[in-house]
Amino acid sequence: MKEFIRIASGQGYWGDRFDAPIDQVKEGPVDYVVMDYLAEVTMSIMQKQKSRDPNLGYAKDFIPLMKTLLPLLVEKNVKLITNAGGVNPVACMLAVRQVAEDLGLSGLKIAAVYGDDILGQIDSMIASGHPMNNMETGEPLTKIRKNLSSANVYFGARPVVEALEQGAQIIVTGRVTDTGISLAPMIHEFGWKWDDWDKLAAGVVGGHINECGAQASGGNFFQGWKDVPNMERIGFPIVEAYPDGTLIVTKHESLGGLVNERSIKEQLVYELGDPTDYITPDVVADFTSIKLKQIAENRVKVYDIKGFPDTEFYKVSISHFDGYTCIGQLTYSWPEALEKAQKAGDIIRKRIEYLGLEFDAIHTEYLGYNACHGTTSPPVVEPNEIVFLAGVRGHNRKMMQTFANEIVPLVLTGPPSVTGFGGGRPRVRDVIAYWPALLKKEAVSPKVLTMEVI
Amino acid sequence: MKIQLVKIAHARSGDKGDTANAGIIALKPEYYPILKEQLTVERVKEHFKGMVLGEVERFEMPNIGAINFLLHNALGGGGTLTLKHDAQGKTYSTAFLRMEIEVDDNLQID
Image 1 (cartoon, one colour):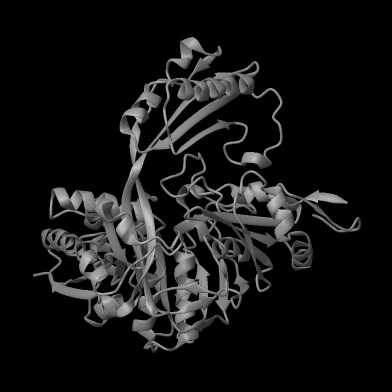
Image 2 (tube, chains in turn green, cyan; image 1 turned 90 degrees about the horizontal axis):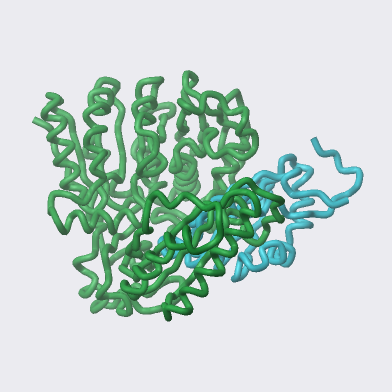
């Protein structure tokens, strides 16, 4: 057994800095690179792409990245685990295989983890006693059945471990949890059992630290952001995992960023609910058990983590079409910039009323005054400029378009010294809403397909 | 004396649907008891009046000297439904740090 393994975060979300995973492999020793691509809304976009072309439905820009990254991974014997497979992991794997073949990387083993996409089985699942009611509102799924655009089960580390056992070096998955892709290598390398709750929980904490990329290593860092070195080449976090479940969070020395107790604490609380009940498909982790200790510069030990048995459910991420939004903006300048912008807000609301437009929500905000801090914002005295933001949400497409057409006319009919309308009429956008639900684990099983490049 | 929370704490916030979470972290271990005493559910609700429309849940994390808050019904519908510029509540952390708290006059602040 290895003394420890290094699991490097290569991406915090789809659209993150493109060269981070390349740097993680180039700039020092790592054993695994993990890359998170998926968010709720991503799944429905990918589902739409797949419906137009059955060979699509995954993170398309992952493939050009592979052209650069694959030779490095092979040269340095580094494994890559990513949920870039979206709603079509097998197609994604085949595209990666094509790249590998073109590069002459014969012998490379590639795996796809799938079976999470249940969009085609929703009716049979409901019929066989899996209602998937909204876990926040309790409403039945039948309410939105005809508007469904994606439905995916969140798998944990299990199928990824299976792919690793089959010898895969590159693993592309569908909706595997962000934490599962970091936990899986630890289980595989150290032979952890599926009821080693404390160790599994440690792996989940390591995954939570990795899952947002540089947010654990000096990016979006509140306490001391001015002192973060070399942010233009910030080092993403690397979790050194030990067989007993101890972690050391670090980063490559040659890159920027920093790792200290404060940077780790900020990431630990990110998107956190009840800290004693951090539920994943494999284990429930207790974030109030985590201990931190800075043991050297840019090295923080994370240890003593406690975990509890997993629940009998998978979480399901379902998305559905739910009307439209439209947000327009104009910029007002000194003097009395805020008063002018607020007058514009007043006029827009009166126009909506006069034209008889009906919306589910109307919202106005003033960037430069209260768009971030809302009602906690103190008064501003004579700002140089204010951006007026007006948005509506509704289900009547025609009324939405009428609203969209009402913003630009304010330039010549409303308060003076206004600009920032270069984009013309704001766009009416579809709303893809999110429906969180639970599904008994026995209702679905993950699948693994491994191939060798010839 | 009254000080702003930002003098003794740092923070990060994020979203879960229409709920924002904000983790408030003591800058020194000796500030954690102040957070526990001052950051009550009632005070936090009052601070976010008109902005957080639902319940406030509070979870103590003595291991890292932090308190995690869930601010329900706070993001204008959340996710893709919201019309708010800060759709994910990313800056609710700093809105929180504006909060005025009462501390001992002799408290040492760097």
